[in-house]
Picture 1 (cartoon, rainbow, N blue to C red):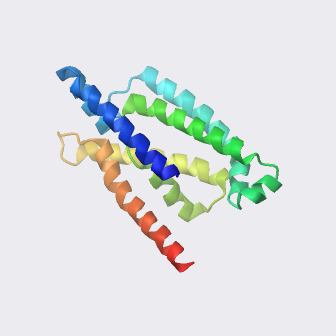
Picture 2: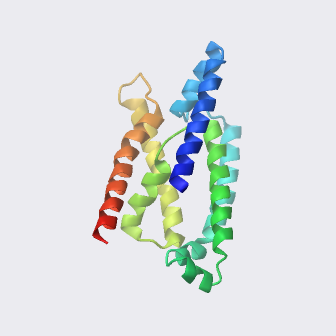
Length: 189
């Protein structure tokens, strides 16, 4: 259900982006296209301050709830038995993550797959304990983003590649692998 909702919303917002492009001037069209590429170089210090502030608040919330996420790993019934308000934790977490993502994307554009790649890489090394997984994933995401940006700047210098394209080339194969791995585990059971 969540995947289908995501596909539907993606189509809706792709249509909205297409309409914005259709009715835009040449300068506006250029800005829209660069936004869809993802670009860390267009952010000023005020915007960085806003991102740091919002991300810090979100990160504090997620770390504070790491015990709730750990209990959810054992299933909804177990989490409820441990006193977790499952629906409230899920809904609040999704709203905070979505708002945080929306604010960041509004400044830097769409940079795909960092949020998918980082946790899966880190989970292999430190396990599923969210007290460690959340900060390690944040660090790995930052590291991957910086490495992708450096790669985008240097690979065919002086041409600067879109960072969103670089992260898509990293993330799409991992995403397909996870789908394949998930389908394989369902077939075995």
